[in-house]
Image 1 (cartoon, rainbow, N blue to C red):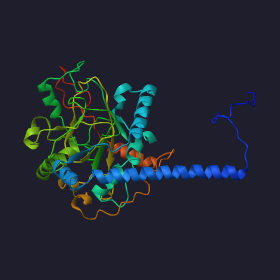
Image 2: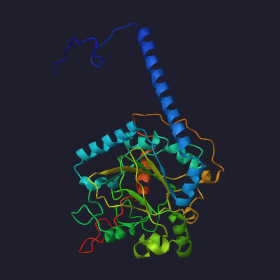
Image 3: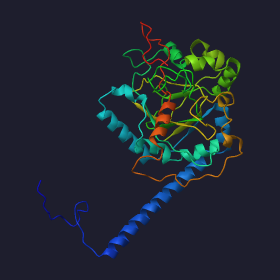
Image 4: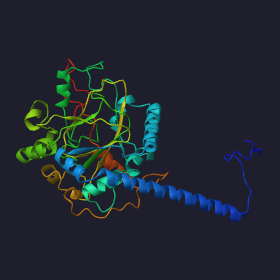
Length: 373
């Protein structure tokens, strides 16, 4: 096509061309670089402050006792909004899978998603808890949306006490083999365990039964005792856990409903039993999950020891070998791909072995399970 030169207003900084002495141009570019660096340094300091306030001795003791912890206001509002915008954009552009794709079956590696972890205080918090020499990063995040009616009876947006009992007894821990996602979770003969589950809440969940995460306090110790007695053959071969009718003989505490606000973070030990509450609210619950493996994991294969001693990899939990915090890469915003290679992204996706686990059906007359685990 033809090219032409148009006169524009001096105030039109997007389209105007300014001819100026080279020294002035260099000075202005240097000033912009200086301002950008100052913003990044300020962001780093904010992140360090948030991380330092989030984890104290009281928080560590609660995490150790319960197996999970709620950390309010960890991720900044702008970062949360960027992730929401990206999720909604992806849903609007999706031509395959529909809404079901966004129920923990999709782990994009785009910066608006991974920045929830990489450009927040989460890496410093996890680094301190696990005792890592360098703050971890993530190459993908698992989108986990809960729509009104999820885990309710077919076509309904309410649930009876008996139906809720069936849902809570359908708890799980991630990484057990299943048919949930072909070529991802059907790793029969192996358990893909890890150290920490990190969930970032992106929407307000201030009432129970709104599709929220629910955790059984102390279940990390109770399941460790179970596997000490029973071994790992059954879970490796069949993916079976002592849930369903066996739940109350193994798990002694009532589940806690993890309510919160956008930017709140929930961190759980891998061994903590959890499930998703039915969503009888009028709103979609938005969340993103990340799985962290510390340096004690030498491969993606099953590591039995931390399933028998849940805190054995969490060196920072006992106040030793915590290492110095390396925050040199925290808060650096990059427009390009994350540092993790595509191979690592693949591993992370395989590790993301299910926040969305449908319990054995208590609703359907034909007994079929929509999303078998």
